[in-house]
Length: 290
Image 1: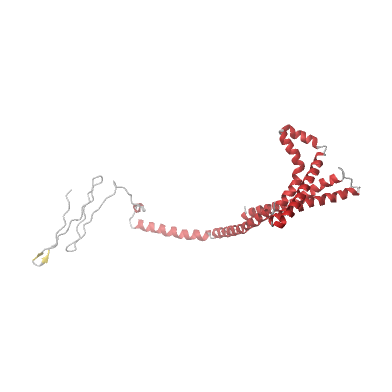
Image 2: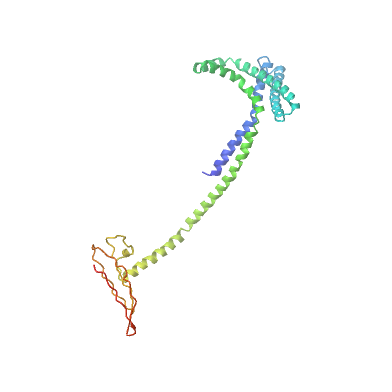
């Protein structure tokens, strides 16, 4: 599989996750706004009544107020000075009260659903009582509280992570380019198959001719003697005496019989020649006795 396709898939999914995370406060505001509007409309929506649309507008503005106050508290804390301390405290108090009211509206909206009775009963039959209580309150309070939490915690960290991993596409491009060149090189090598075969045919022909010439000259071993066996029992040592004196080479010692111990004869020192009648005399070499 193409590595660049894998990396692009990873980056696309990562950027989609970041996009959904960036849009999450907007979705939470809409959801909590519906719950607030339901409470302002008296617990029911009548699409033919103007008060329903007024309630929807109030619920939306109320949730925007909640998010904006929590976001403003974060900004004031980041730019903390003595003059901003009081402002941050007042705005934080407003944000806290707004979150509590919004959470109450969401809890009432969830609790008013008649179809949730069977759901709570089914959950209570499986989970312990304290977990059921956490589930019931979390079902109504989690989303509105998340609006304030996301306002305090900046999602910029997710965006920075996506930007940092953007270089993976460049590395994937380099790997893809390298693989493309290797693939083209192998195709070119296969295209030269006939030329490679012709060259090796020539080399094999020259080697065969060399063997034939050796056989013509009487070498019927067919190259077997080219491989010298390394074995102390079968190896034969042949000692040759270096010619000295008048330049006539001395005869070589006969090779010992197979299986008999072989003695290496150390070189015999040659004494200086003494002149006899003005002519230097050479001392013949002495062979060691077995």
